[in-house]
Image 1 (tube, one colour):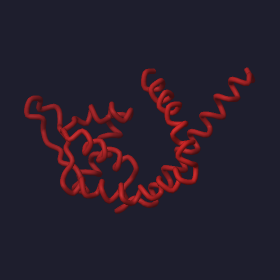
Image 2 (tube, helix red, strand yellow):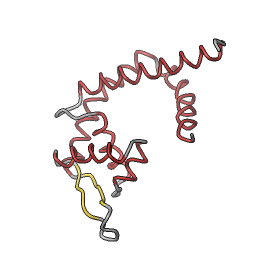
Image 3 (spheres, helix red, strand yellow):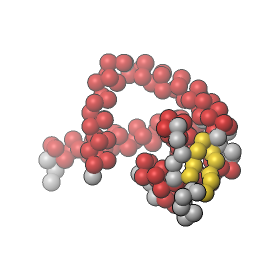
Image 4 (spheres, helix red, strand yellow):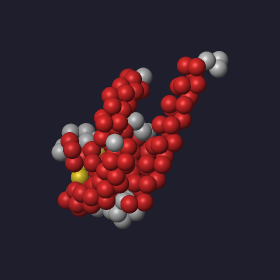
Length: 146
């Protein structure tokens, strides 16, 4: 069981999980108005797609439970960052869109995060980051397919 391949896999995932946690902590510290990474991620997604999404669609997009997404959306609605309305075609569903305040909050979050990310990329080196992206992307696609 202690093959070189196992050790390599364990090292890879250990590094990924630790880097994820450290990056989340660092970015959370600079996000405005006690925003969380999950809040920014949903706002960023809604701003990019420029279309309403149901909570179920958002949960699938982020690979989280509907309950977790409902919790995040409730916090975003309370902050005035999203609008949640009934689906006129199916009263059991709701539809979510980003509000003007949500767009401004997303822009403020991007402005706060960009220097942190840019500095990290600069310190690592653009070529190293560019070389790592295909492997990370392939890993993500593999995990999404499972």
